[in-house]
Structure formats: structure tokens, C-alpha cells
Amino acid sequence: MNKQSNRSLLFLSSLLMISLLSCKTSFDEINYSDGNADFSRVVAVGSGYLAGYSDQALYREAQANSIPALMAGRFSVVGGGNFVQPLVNTGVGIGLNANAKWVLDFKDASCNNQTYFTPIPATANGDLSNYNWLGNVVSFNNISVPGTRLADLTDLSYGDASPFLGNPLYSRFASNPGTSTMAGDALLSVPSFFVVWLGMEDVYDYAISGGAEGKDSITDAVTFSSRFTSLLNSLTAQDANGIVANIPLPTGFPFFTSIGYNDLVLTSAEADTLNILYATVDPSIQFVAGSNRFVIADSSVSTGRRQIEEGELILLSVSVDSLICNGLGRTVPIPAKFVLDADEVFEITNAIGAYNTAIQNYCTANNIAMADMRNFFNTLSTGYVFNGATYSTEYLSGGAFSTDGFYPSQRGAALMANQFLRVINSFYSAKIPLVDVNSYPGIAFP
Image (cartoon, rainbow, N blue to C red; front, side):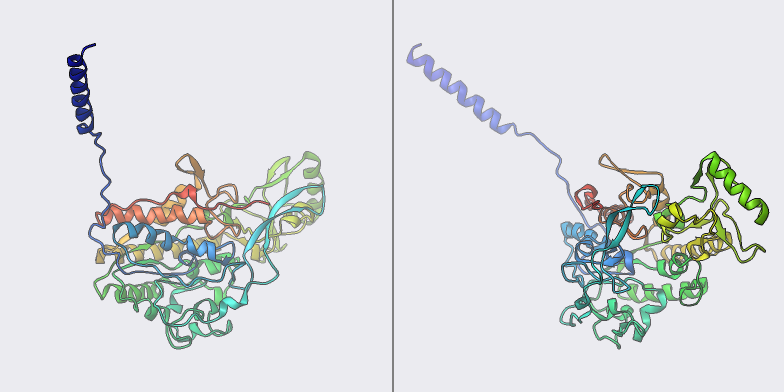
């Protein structure tokens, strides 16, 4: 090949290279946006669900992955400001009963060589140093305290360190313990956007206790609406936007659904033996081979016991070992404190309906976004798929709830954060990325 040919080839090669370099592949860029919202100063006001309470305690990892913290992480993509939480020390955390966080244990039943998973405290006691006051040098963005009812928001004594007078989980970060209030502290940062999820304890304190009255009574609907309106008015008075969540039904929590009303499975011989026993003492109670309704205590009937009806709920707090080995639910009625009867279920669902109406009415009248968590929990109960992983309300295996069966796991918190973000994106014309649910810690099995 002569020199002229070499020059021609080199020239053509150069043209081809220039052409290739100039033909860059075009990709659509993702343009995230805060839309009509301002996330520069976000405040979250709630109870256990927004505080990051999980596995029956407040511990650092779950706080770091709390619903509002995960949301704030996504807000940062569109100019959101810092989100400061009152974090507890690294370790076993602290619960409402001064307990350590729960962990799963593999336990042998006291009969029949059966085994089952059960939650136990990680240590004998929680880390009491977490009660130490964090000071008031900074304003916290997460004003959420486990155990908080709406009445507590404006209660001066709620910040008292004594569990007999206040809530130590609030006093530890209250701006002025014993003087300040949660509602007042929520305004210290002059919020531009708020996340509110309240009302759970106003009804679920009663439900979790098996319908106990007194301190755990259900807040009446009129009082709920008045207190809710007062809080939201104080937050919107400074032109803040926000999002509010409504209240799920009991059937959306493993705590109320893990033990089915007819989960008493008997052999033909076992059913016959029980039928002979009850034939003389209470013939209204009968059993068959296969699935049967448990026997529960009921002071309203003459015998003091009856078989549970469909729609009534057995609580996860009942002793599994006693159900397996000690005749509980067969020859020994399940105590009323572990059961929600039809009247109690009606009271709970009726209250939730009234709360949700008040929440919806306020949001509609004041142009505030509402996350329909009642509907989301219903959807979750049938199975919810995120990037190939299925989550549900099944206890432990469903992955969305922690070992206590009521509060979310860290992945469950991520699922719920995404529900808030979807509503925010739609309502405020924003474009905020969702949380990668599967990247967060799941339930640790022994």
C-alpha cells in the first residue's frame, strides 16, 4: 500500500472517529422536583409509628429508618433541609415499659416436641441512660413519641421524666421538660412542611389491652376531632403544607389476625374426647375433626364461656405454649384480656371510622394531602409486591411488621414511607424518588 493510500485511510478513520464521538447516546434525565411543596423545614408529629418504634422498643437502627426519616432522605434530593431526630444510644434501646427491644428466639414447647418462634427482650432491661435529657440546643424535626394520644400533645406534665406523671420518651428530648408540650415543640423549627400520623393510641391502647377501660379507653370522636383540628390549625397557621395519615383497621395488623378464630385443629379422637367432656358441663360447645373455634371466657353467658365467633379477634399476646400444651382454648377458656369480642370490635371500628371522617374532612377543607393508610393496610393484607419481593400482614413471614406484630419492621417503615411519598408526588405535583424497600434490614431470625 503506497503512502497516498495510507493517508486516505488515516483521513477516513479520523472522520469515522469524529462521527462516532459526535453521535452520543441520548438518555432521558430524571428531573426531580418539590412541586408545590417546601421541604426546607420538615416536622413530623406522631406516636410510635412516626417515632421509629419497632420490636416493642425505640432503638437507634429503627429510628434511623423511621417513616419520616426515610421520607426526609428523599426530600433532600429536591432541596429538603436537615431532619434531626432525638436518637437513642446504640444498643438495646428503651421501650414504653423500660424494656429492651425484642428479638426472636426459637423455643421448645412444653409438650409434644413442638417448637415455635417467640419474641423475647434482648436483655433483662432497656438502656435507662436513654432517659437522660438531650438538651435544647437544637430543635428536633421528629416530634413523635411512642404512646402519645391526642390529649398528650398539649399536656404540660407529659414532659415530666416520671412515668407516673409523664412520658420519659418525651421528657428525654422535650425543649423544657415539665413545661413545654409536644404541640409547642413542633412549632419551634417554624415548619414549612409537616407529616402527621396521630390517633393510633387513642383507639389501639384499648384494642391491644383486650378492651380494658380506664386509662386505655377509646377517645370519643368529638374530642378527637377537636384536638386534631387544633394541632393542624397551629401547623398551618404559618402557611405550612403537609400530609396526614388516617387510621387502619385491626384486621390490618398481625397482632390481631395471627391467631385465627378457628385455628384450633383437632384429630377425630381429640374432638370426641372434648365432646364427651362438654356434653355434661356445656353442650353448646362442640368440636369436629379439623378446624374448630376456640373456647373463650365470656362473663355475659351463664357458663362463663363460649366458642368464639367469626369476626372476633384473639390477640398475639396470648401464650402460645398454653394454646399448644395446656388446653387453653379447649378445656380452659382464653381470658377476655386476650380477646376482642364482637361488641369491642364494633367499638373499635366505629371509632376508627369517625376518626378517619374527621381527618378526611379537615384535609379536604384545608387542601392538605391525606395518605389513606387504612386502604394500604387492607392491600398489604392480601400481599404487596415491591421489586419482586412480596410483603404482607402475616406475622414474621410477611416481613412488613416487627416482632411485636403491631409496629412496622424497617422494611415495613419503608413501604409506608413510599405510600406517603406517592401521595405527596400526586397532590403537590412533585417528583420525588421512592425508597428502595428491599435494601433495608428485615426481621432477624435466630
